[in-house]
Length: 138
Image (cartoon, rainbow, N blue to C red; front, side, top):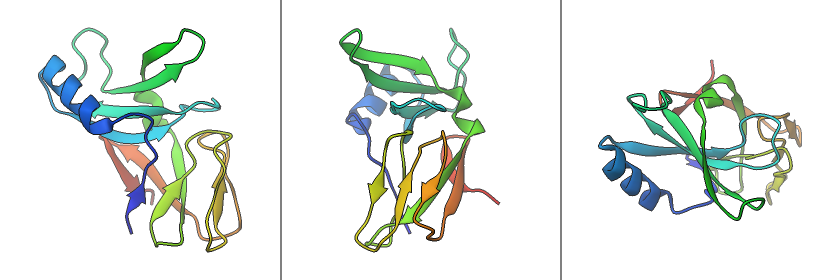
């Protein structure tokens, strides 16, 4: 089974841009809110902490309030669990934020992002982020 993501931006271009800018490899991890938020962000990882800010994860999102792309420290992404369900193609999918309701033709659904988990009673796969990778919890 493959984990499917729904990124907000072209993650390959973002990885290339920040890898070149920072001089270290940057990888896309997931698209998620960082808790109870109703807005997800694309979350990226670098193995070494940023020399100025000290974080290894950062998130990019579009702010309607200021009308531009914003960047945020996303280190706390490792504190959260991701509940995933199988879609009709056999891939695993997760809800990105508290209002991100996903339903599939096989009857499975997932909702709640990192704020809560609501599902259709189907099998849940629980993952965490560890060192820039989504790994099964357990």
